[in-house]
Image (cartoon, rainbow, N blue to C red; front, side, top):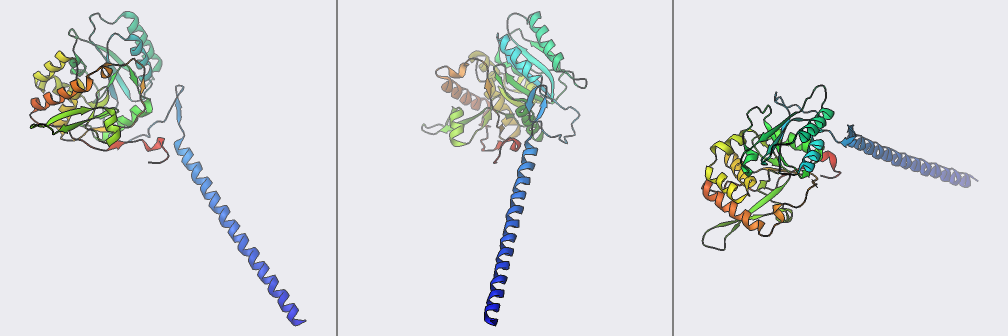
Length: 331
């Protein structure tokens, strides 16, 4: 009898112990699940977009740059594509840090009154009480690619965002690139990287210009093209008044490579590479000169000519890439 009672108590104790361990394990699992759910909710809250003007864009957090000349000037190059110009201006006037728009106009006829009226109307629609965007046409008598880098006397901002009229970037990408530029204001910061290589097959080193696929394959670049790049306004003066005039003459004659010349100039001043910013490109125009046969060879000729003019190769290659970590899950 005692043995049976002892065995019964022993089995009961073991049963209670098993139930207690199972309950404890269940509590741990529930706590772990709750922690996971809380982490996901916090992550989603941090990624929530801010809606502004019907355009869902992720706004950069307020930064602490103590520069009285906040904002940037949009320097847009155009040529007989008023429809693209209207589309581009309509988009970029929504970007929060835009201060002014300067349209590089090199056409034989002045801008029409209807074009001016449309653009001013767009600016008025997107202006706020605390921000009035300024619009100016920079009229040029001569048709030259150097016109896009002429100094702007009354520019209120240090930052210049140089852009072509046939590509558009989301405002969130532009604002992020602007923040990157403010962390290194002497550097070119842009969205379109390119690379140069040394061809050592001959007795004298020859440089080769390579496009996007070389950048994609190797992860290296040494230029960001001025078709979509931030730089300091001082480089406009250096390009026009201090860079060798023979380089500007070469650009005018060949109608090419003003962007490479600017990359050479900035690298020659800083001794540092540019910064490539990841951003989604929306091409709204037809293909340009880059699609014409022999384009890469002509660009390689430009690189070698500019090396001769600068008496050295100032371009510096790098693998650094600026990515907005708020817009990706893993980085």
